[in-house]
Length: 121
Image (tube, rainbow, N blue to C red; front, side, top):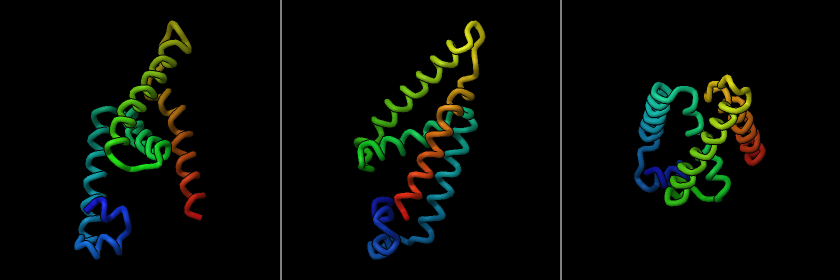
């Protein structure tokens, strides 16, 4: 159903997917998963939201075969970069890694949202 839904609601409905029910289930599932990740990982978890979208735009595909490994590697590199900055920027004191990821990640997320709106227009 997910692949059919990505091709459009009309296509998904013609393939036999109950679009209204699927949309509600998808929103509930993604909300629960996002809340769970944020509860366990804290503010760093938005890296898990931004990095897959960056990987998707980098590889110009949404195939899980490419996106999942790229998300793992991209998220790890981004978090390592932010951790390195958090530990060394104001040495001997350390910054919170959540604040450093927010400083570098928020502009990326804002850029992605603005870039997405330009594509749609």
